[in-house]
Length: 368
Image (cartoon, rainbow, N blue to C red; front, side, top):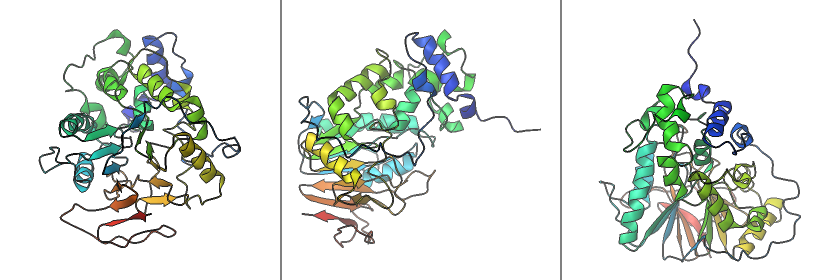
């Protein structure tokens, strides 16, 4: 007898399109049925050929500079790895309470999928944002491609535990008739993430792209085409969609969107003078920024930089699904350091080939 299909297989994009069509007859199904871009998706051939876009007039995505900014990458449903990364950052104590003071913490998306602790992780970052604000700091969790996929009701990367995870979410109503096509074990998750749902609204409060001082943060990467479209406009349109007020904007579901782009994350890293680095320079100039920090593409040897340290790639595959070790990136003025252990447990880092690195215990990075 053949094995029963996984629930995530039953909830492939065609069913997602059916559900979304039932929620909003005007919502195009094509965005939900689009296959996930392959990891090796190529960048548009013209990416470095366009003239530099003018500075974006709407800078509502920009946050004030801070003395210390720490970024952590993809955590994919692994609560233990999330806690470890937050402790490495100096953000929480053993009881998960904010101890970062005026620290600004950025999580670059992909809290969802591939693990079973997603509800707790989303709720943890929401609570820490409140605690940090009261202490004079800030926590900014961004939306990545897996947050976008879940609001599209594309559940291909959800674990069996992930379907059960939202059954106890307070205030969640999974009995609506629009959820009738969903297999019963998945209805709670669908109710949580359908546009306008409880957790979709939580994600709607998050941005896709932000800048803190002179550093830009995004899950996949900001391309010149995104700055021409408008960074603040992308954030607004994604927010309206997740709140259930508008269809999903094509700019965030496209293969070269800010949550899917991999232009700056190749292995070997792009070097100054390449098309990728030329595109990076254009995007940074349009946002009046010095560097960019991205996740999305696992760096098997730890956090790396490219394009003369103008882009830092911080997805280290720390979730148990990938087996990497937690790490964080610290930016303090013009000093950028990689943190790989809690402050009380320093460790030596190897120098990645081609990077400009300080050889210090527990840290590596650029100093200009």
